[in-house]
Image (cartoon, rainbow, N blue to C red; front, side, top):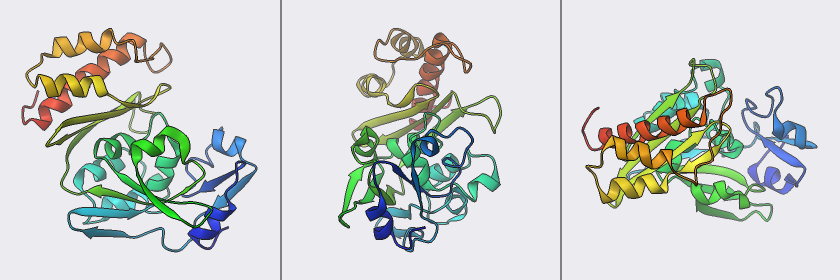
Amino acid sequence: MAKSPEEAAVSKTASAAFVAGGTEVNRLGSDIAEKSATLISLKRCSGLDGIEEDAGYVTIGAMCTFQDLVESGKVPGWLKEAALFMASRTKRNMATIGGNIAAKRSDSYLIPALSAAGAVLELLGSDAKTERIGIAEYLDGAYDDKLIVSVTVEKDVRLVSKRYANTAQSHAVLTMSAALAEEGVYMNGAVKNVGLLHFCDLEKAFNEDPEISEDKIIEMVKTCTGLHTADDMFGSDAYKRYLIAVTAFDLFKKLKGKEV
């Protein structure tokens, strides 16, 4: 059990994994636990919690729990909403923002919203050096050996999200977020058994034609060759594509102030 972030980072090897809240690593059938010879607990590491606000940005320690996010007056509402997608308060008291990002699950509660908002991560390497990178760069996989120290987001981002699951406790077939910035809309999602997706083509379509019809969006997603959905227990390929399309259209209209 590491006593400092530096000790934890130095201890990280290819066969080791960090343990934050433990809701993922300790889960029955966890791939992380199965592949790891050593687990490095972060529970006693100082300096990984706390939430600070400065100049319109909020910096959240990686060990802050989902419930910490919900209860903090500094955390923006769009991130609270994403944290509340985890329906169990017991789990929210355990699961951490850093752990949810590092797990990179295809039904992630937080990553779609954090990605659409352009979150920035502070990472600590085994050389005791820190660096700041965008969450999109982290998700590419080149930084898995580094410890997430904190997450910084812009507080006043205009962002909306939607999650689909059979029950509040079930795995989500789709979690999707859209954010509106001066340069246009950003859209990210998590599709179960597919992955964490950046919907670049949808962004382009909405930015080029804000009045584009829902039918055109549905047809675009239906025929998209770069989207690798498939039939499984969570729904058919056609259903998932339709869900992505209508959700994207719904979120965009909400961002523009046009409820559907």
